[in-house]
Image 1: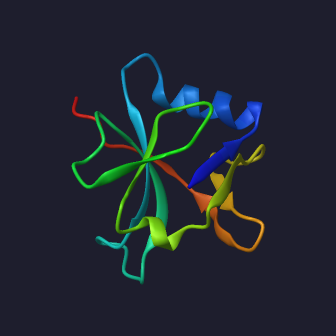
Image 2: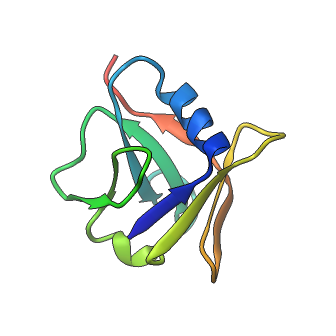
Length: 107
């Protein structure tokens, strides 16, 4: 799987990561969401044991190997210029128009 993003999106992700070390995890989250699941982008200290690498030119990105099937081979992440959220899409589908970044790093 490959995750593409433009320069503006890269800058917004860099803002979210800040100066602390962190890696990105693309997750189909079903915990406490009250629905069938939502796509989230997490900032984590490190990948989980079940994660596999997602190809990205900008950041170290991971996803759970069992969740990879939920996504298309090429995904595009776009920062919303008018709202603090992101859009995740592919050529065939929109996975989320209002995706948030959640910082999961230990304090």
